[in-house]
Length: 95
Image (cartoon, rainbow, N blue to C red; front, side):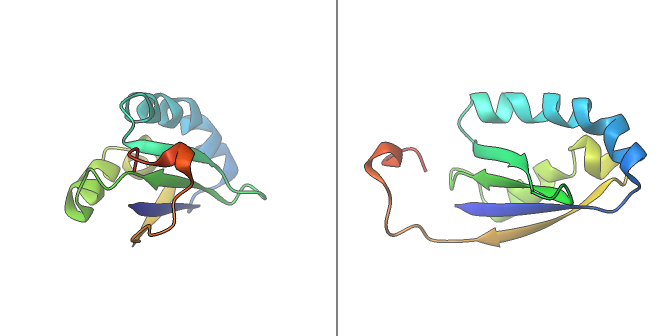
């Protein structure tokens, strides 16, 4: 599975201008179960995506280029791959 950090690289007005489009882009990936958890950091300097291992790192990197925050230069992304070895029963089979 993957942890993706988004760090805002543009002024807050640029981020705000593309937030709804970014969230709409997230929706089908959350609905499909590919993105397990998404949300803003606190404080709001970026966001976090927790992504299923159903996708390869290269496929994920390609997918992230379609995020409106990437397209409009509002955020940069960092992908951390991890191997989950202790998993709460509620998430068994979902990662």
